[in-house]
Image 1 (cartoon, one colour):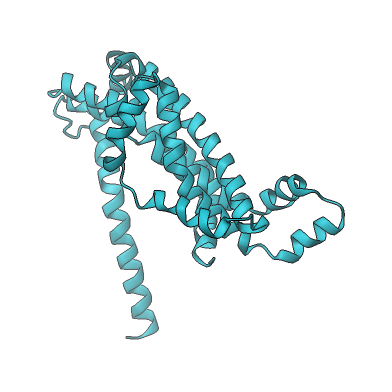
Image 2 (cartoon, rainbow, N blue to C red; image 1 turned 180 degrees about the vertical axis):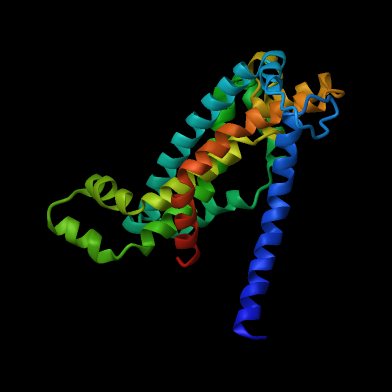
Length: 269
């Protein structure tokens, strides 16, 4: 195969995958703007579908719930990931060789295996139907990956940089916040984006833990919306677009750092 034909083949494959990803998104957008209830395409774009979905689906309350849960969980997940990654990757804390593999076991456990004991434990301490309960669960589920991610990131930073900072008088916290965190900015933003997507898109945990309609996040709200408006596909598509929009905006804002962070992570440890 010549170099030119190989380039053409690569572009063809990339365009094919792009079409596979983009077609469902475009189809949903067209359905959301359709005046027809079955969502069939039309040249008459009906923007009022979004207002109708927002009002009839009470999406404002659901978006508030998802925002509180996602922001709270992501902040705690990232702080704990920074601390554990620093402890295991740079400080080499006593017992780290045993504790770190134990933390990584969390990556092996499925949510389905944990949810029943979690439900009964959280019911005992009053965290059922609580945003705090969902935040605690998502923090616990996100820490193993965060610890692994930040440990690999910090270990890839030249040790001479940390040693130079310590020779200049920097303490333990100064090394973390003044040296390692700024250098690791792409990896940290990637971690923020991944955790935000996972928490925002969670359906299973929220379904088990939240039964109060006034506290349900957007994923449960969309499920309830679908149950009530099965014949209005255009309105359901509009609700889906509204619910996905915050994550799409977040990705568009951080996409350069996200790609850089993923590529950097691919060549570490």
